Amino acid sequence: MAVVVVNEIPQGDQSFYDKVNPRVMPDGQLPEGCQLHIAGPSSGGWRVITVWDSEEQFQQFRNEKLIPVMNEVGGDDFIAPSIQPDPVHRLITA
Image (tube, rainbow, N blue to C red; front, side, top):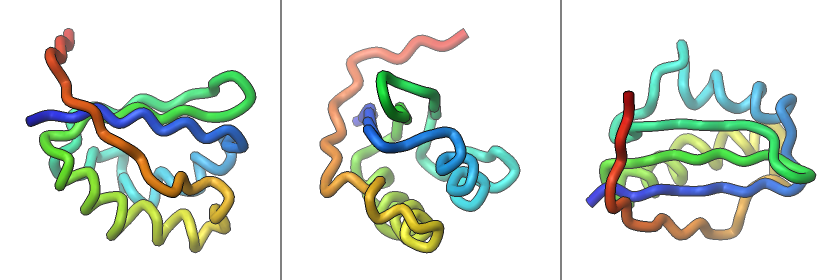
């Protein structure tokens, strides 16, 4: 079942995102299992919204790619202790 992940990063900003994103999504390519990626500023921070084919694919990406890169870039303060994916009822794209 597809899941949506909304990652609110209160202390995040575009600079940090721009350091991490090219390393986890080279050439702007979505990771396997990721259907949608949206990122931008939010009130006082940064928000990333993704839709995944399954929670397992998201967790694998998070644990094996995202968190290690965030740690390398110096993002300990940006990592949420846990993120709860929610089921997607419907995804409509253009």
